[in-house]
Length: 327
Image (cartoon, rainbow, N blue to C red; front, side):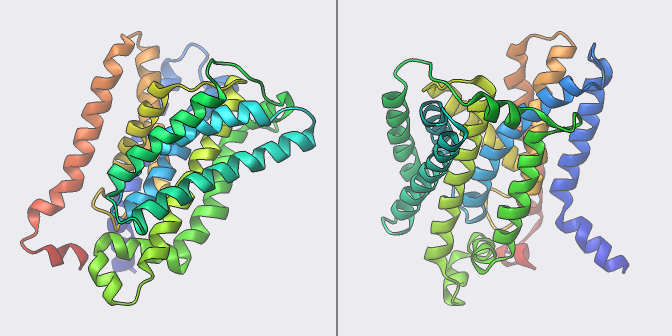
């Protein structure tokens, strides 16, 4: 029994540290906030955190295969612009618009997967190029900020259930339960971890490498599109903002690392990434309540990221042979 607990703690060290760090930081935040532990404070923090969490989950899945998707921020922005155009009108029309936005995310992820898997290009180069295409589509849809969204849907997505639980958290939990966990337990989900550990060994073992990598990028597009929908619900509009897309792409990588997922692939997961995203968002909130210059935020983000990367790489410095990493 003790060995089981020891193994569980060791294998989940990253998510547990990220969760503990978030709890400590958020407790400090609400204790210093003028409104205290109120529904409005919790709802606002939840919406901001969930927004980054969805983009970060989109980044996590390709990272597990030892890849990197630099287009997630631009898919996020494109989905926002598309949602501000289509998620309008009657509830039925808005629902159809939601389906189109989610389908667009799947198509973007499928294009990334096709180029990476069958075009055999490096994921960083391929997704950097496709990200520019997706931003071009966003700019075509919204050459200027504007648009609208079904108000009932927007209020529902960004409000709370029963006046207590932010719906963005419910949406996040639902995505974990109905998308991430089934994927993690599926053949292709386990294959993604095997590919990240050693693609050559996975291939020689009969793992469906091509299908697993393709699905990883498809799911990345889906999660980025969900984030775009949530952004539309928060802002009631759309904007082809390249700076926003780039910022979320970089922050998603940081959240992945803070959450304990290795950039080398093969270990980690969405749960730790979610806590990593909330940690990064809480840094900005702490700067606000302590009345510090917002320009300090990149410094603190950089320090947190550097410490997380260093801790993640510490094991690499201790091993003498690469095979020791997989024992």
